[in-house]
Every structure is written in C-alpha cells, then in structure tokens.
Amino acid sequence: MVVSGGVLVSGKALIARYTNGIDAPGTLIGDPAPGATRKTADIEGPLDILLAGIDPRDDSQAPRSDSIIVAHIPETMDQVFLFSIPRDLYVRIPAFSKTGFNGTTAKINSAMSFGSDTGNGRHDVGQGFQLLAETVGDVTGIRGFDAGAIINFGGFKKIVEAMGGVTMTIDQTVESEHLQPDGTARPKTAACRNGGCDHPYTGPRKVYEKGTYHLQAWEALDYVRQRYGLPNGDYDRQRHQQQFIKAMAEQAMSREVVTDPTKLLKVLDAAGDSLTFDGGGNSVLDWGLALQGIDTDDMTLIKLPGGGLYSNGKYLGEQLDPSSEEFFQAVQEDRIGAFLLDHPEYVAAES
Image 1: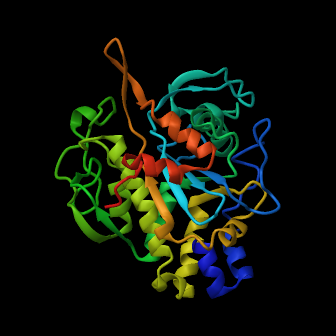
Image 2 (image 1 turned 180 degrees about the horizontal axis):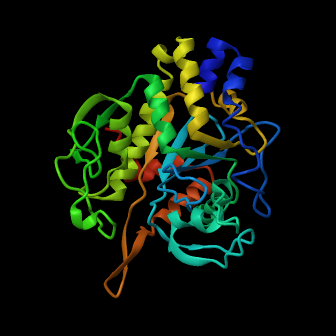
Image 3 (image 1 turned 45 degrees about the vertical axis):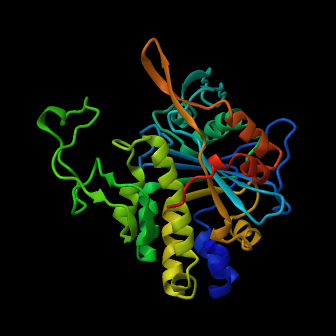
C-alpha cells in the first residue's frame, strides 16, 4: 500500500530502487502444493499471504515466529481479511526433507526453527518459513500461499520512526513486562539474571492506558509485544498486533507521508531493513500496484476463538474452537464476507 501510494509521488523506477532489498523471490513460499496453482503473470484474487513476525537474531540462532498472520484478499480485490494463528497453537508439524526433520507435534511457532537448520550450525530464516507455510497450510486448508513476508520487529521499529510514530487506539490498559516508563529495559532480579525465570523483571513498568495516542516507535512495538497480565493472554496480543498493522497502514497512506517524498523514501528505505518478501514470481512493486485500490477502511480484523490444551494437567499449548474449521472452509471457498455475516463474533474489535 505504501508502494502504490509512492508511485504517484516519486515515480515507479525510483520506488523500485528502494524496494529491491525487500524482494526475495523463491525463498519463502517454495513450490505450490500438488494440485495448486500460483498466479505469476497477473496478480488476481482470491489471494492468500502469510506474514511472520520474528525478533532480530543472527544466523547462529534458530528463529521463532512470534507473530503469524494470514491476509486473505477475495476475488473482487477490494478487501483484506486479517486473521492470526496463535503462536502456541499445538499442531502437527510435517516432515521437512531439506533438514531431515521427521515431523512432530509441537507449538506452531517452532516450525520455523525445525525448518531453518542448514546443517552447519547456521539457520536460514527463509527456509524455516517454508516449513511454517506448510504447517499453516495444513491448519487452514490453504493449499499454497501466493506470497509470504518475514517481518523483523527490530527493523519494523525503523519504519515507524521514519513515519514519525503511529497513532493507535489502545483498547485496554496494558502494563509492559519489558520496559520502564522512560523506555529503558526493566532490570532483572538477582536470582533471574542467569535465566530460568518466567518473569525475571522487576521495578516500575511502562503503562499504556485506554485511549487514542500518537505512539513513538518504541512504545508501539512494546505495546504489541505484551501478553502477560492480559485477560485473554496471547489472544489479546493478536488483536493488538492486527490493530497495529492497520494503524501503520493508515499512517503510511496518510497525506503527510505519501505527499512528502523525503519521508516516503525514508519509510521505504527502512522497509528494506525489516521486510523480506516473496511474491511468488511478482515483485513487491507489482503487488503494490495490484492492490492499490484497497484502502485501510477495507481491512477487516478477525479473531479466531480458542483456549488452552492440557494433558493430565500439563499445558501443551493452544487449540482452536471447532467452529474455526467452518471459518477455514470459508477461506478456502473465498466466502469470508458471508461467513462473517452469519458469525459476527469473529469480527475483532478495532479499538
């Protein structure tokens, strides 16, 4: 969306130069599933895009997808439906020949780790994304994603900084697990400095009160990372992350960004440090142009109901409500709009 707005301001060739660092064709979504087709000549709906958010790590550390979001664009190409897959969803992770992984049952955020091992002590995040995509496809019934993107949260902060912050409506009071009121890290207790504690921090916390605020980059990223202490835990965090994506899109498409070439190019430059995009044969610029008719008002946030899964009193992870199968069927058949009319409880609050 930023790209398509930028084309009107700075010219296609210049925008392409700034987005070349984002494109990583053939690295994330791999080959389509048997019987599935991928649209490479023209970008036409319906479309499914997989987004994974990771914390910054070097290639010696196995990556974990702390945020997993699917964007579905219907055949009409006039809407975007966003839904999150719980990071702790307890699922069957399939075998992956590239790493010799035989498959297991575990939390879905570990799929990227199982798929990333290159065998020499290094980890390839793009290769890990391929196994994540296959795992999410098994959960949702999506037989092949049309595009995929990895979002590095550290680099994402640079995008928000380039935009001058982001305006968000905070829908519940949230206390930070990680930061003090001035944005510095909360210290760890002496007993937890060497690890082994679930909640190692001590001292005053940054608090985000209900209301609409223009957040600095560090505040926005800290807010959407919080889950401890929230009534619905990670389900509340999923909603906040979806709200953040929509708020970022609104900010990026605002007149103060798209009519300011200097600020716009700073945003695109920052995007090159934080985003890796595989458009299934089409560049991020091609996708931006194809989706330029979609506005943030056409973005619907969806919440999938679920809860904890236990075995003999031991927490294994999360499980989705059985009704989610009907939702996933609607995704596969490109009738999410009709499904939401019958199930309005699936529409997430936007503020």
